[in-house]
Image (cartoon, rainbow, N blue to C red):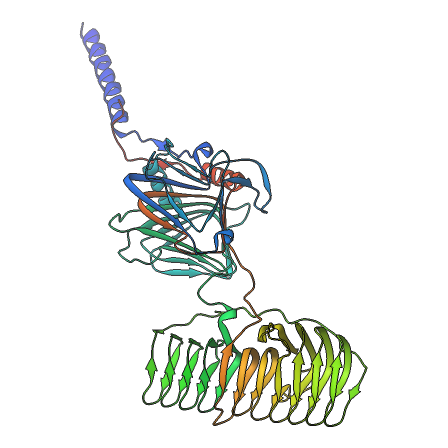
Length: 533
């Protein structure tokens, strides 16, 4: 009898223990999950908006052809292949995006509303935070670098900070931005030739103001065609200079602009160090790291610091060989020069050289006092050695329909001292463009210049009394911001490309499939412990 009672008690205890273990397991079980992104739901740009949300897709006026949002399916190399989606998709069936100065390309329709997005955004955001390879919590600029690779996608998490992707940046993977900033500045800026391959997710956590994504390639704020003088190392200017139009800039990180007294600039100045004498006026902005000025300085714009380098990209210098045919003339001569290759060309005083137009490759060009060069058509002069003109020189068009941007001097400066490649005497009147990246341009007194000048150094003497007006033949190399994959915005109000230009947003299934593969390769996201019935 006692044995039966003991066995019964043991069985009862075992049963209770088993039941308790089951209950404990229920109360402590965790769920593992990964976000699921449907490629069928994604277009080039996607908006999951709150009720009464607003979207502004606005580029730069008259630049529609340079800003393209395409739902056509592209490869990562830019080729169009089978498939594709609308350019813009959103969950609302009204309040469709306001589109200006942007070209939309889409399969079926450029804009499609009333999309039922099935994405679990809270799970997606949590997963990204837990798996981020890079977490950015302060203002950051990435340029001249690569994040990830075509076979190694990364996750970048930006929390309440401004991120700028600049020149020569390439990113692969998921770029997730939480925009809770109070600032009106764009939370994301892509400039120059920056490129992102994959998925950009923009989560507007502060809906009290509009979020902004700024996309701008060559159409940026600083362009070579806006500069009348560009020194690679230095610009040194005497007194009494007047720049009627155009900016001045020095591209070297340790370079400087030094100006005497009584100077007036209609444009802006850009240099690591800027030194101005007394009674100087800059009507627009100064961009600098160090700035010194004398008495009675007047700034019409804004003093902007620091200045990041490089802020300009100079054009390529042509490769060429000069000829051997010499042309030697005395005083009071008139000569018409056919395009072609020449050795030394020399004239005495009071001479006129007519350029018929075309390309000229010349070893050396020397002219005396009171001489003129007149171009009758667009002319490009490539000088191997140097060009020297005496006092009262003229370089000007022979026809009214030609201007300074139709005459370009490329001066290599081979075998010359730095100060002897482009030298003109006093009282010059020059309507042309000059590019001498290896040497120094010397500007005479009482000059009238129209065009643009790029050189290693640019010098003028005291009492230059020079009048400079911009008519540039040079332009910044064409660059474009590019996004291959898709953009997803969640929030209430967004502006893109925020009056930017030279941007291409291409739907790319290849990039998005790589994103999905990367998500699947990451660890599961474990949800909070909770009771499971």
